[in-house]
Image 1 (tube, rainbow, N blue to C red):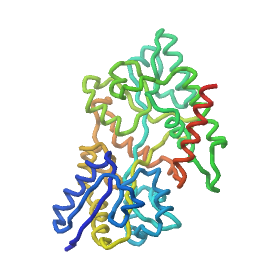
Image 2: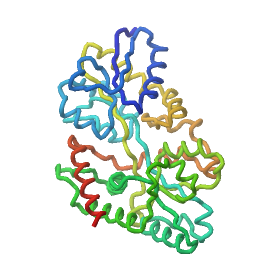
Image 3: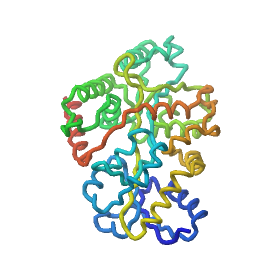
Image 4: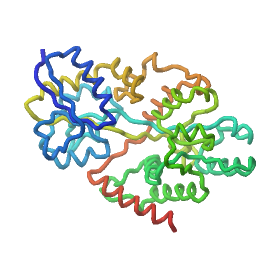
Amino acid sequence: NTRGDLSISVPKEMLSYINQCVEEFNNYYPNVKVNISLEKDISKDKKETDIIIIKSEHTKYFLSKFKDDFLNLEEFLSKYKKHFKYGSLENVSLDNVTYGIDLGSNPYLMIYKKDIYEKCNINLDDIKTWDNYVESSKYINKKLNKNYKFMHNYKNIDLYDIFLNQLGRGYKDEKGNETIISGESIRAIELLNIFNKNEMIYREENNSLIEALKSEEVVSTICTATDVYNIIEKLPSMKGDYTIKRIPAFILAGNRNVSKNEYSLLVFEGKNNKASRTFLKFIIENEKLQEKIFKDEKVLPFNINVYKSKSLNKKEDFFNGENIFELVYDVYRKSPNIKYNEDYEDIRKNINKTLKFINDE
């Protein structure tokens, strides 16, 4: 009968998620008092924090800076490895020791406004590569004498990340060298330049994806799985208007699966280790809770067993009877595991400057 206190630091975006986890946890463990606080300055408050939720890209930085302060969970998590996508725990590990879990991922998909492509006799199954995508986009605007956009308002750096990750690269290679001058990076930048030079990207910064689709100016775009479920919920009048596919590849038979890790959970060493392990065990094993959170928060499950759920694997009328959940899982399962490095944020800032310089030329 676990007792004690538990202090969890969480970013605002994940507050509702963790609140649901804690509420259900306390139904089973009422003698554990859980205190949830918005993101703390860990360099000052780590002794008062048992569990921290952070963006996945910052995880390696925290692990490298505070390595001796985190709880070694290697043995504890060994029996749960089958619950996670292969390789997904690398991001919460350092020197072959695991200190937490990744709280799922958000696969990228492509949606197409069916009637626009049908007017131009374009078979969506023929759009297999980015070259196909760009050429079909130019053809549509020429044939219909329109100025449609073919990508929502992603920042250049975000599109670069998607393209680079699609090619199996992060910001550093296996030897620790930055990849900005690698062949994969050059191909990602070239594709980004094509999108910008052909004015394919919707640049109304104040408009959300939902607003952009309502305007009918954006006829196809990359979107996350979370976006897809928000579209189903918020645009019921557009039911049947869209087709959903994997994103195009760089080459025929190339990779069409990309997924972005979003948040990680790390556990600090301290007097509440038992309560921390109990909480972690609870959220890993409670598959019904992950189902509920997905339905409520549109946050995808991290336990891959949940993807077998019959209640989630259903045909979506909005997308003409497609089993979206099945597609989402397949993209997630086949996506490259992108490794974030401890100086990710600094490298990202430098890449962003480079991209601005290139696009201003």
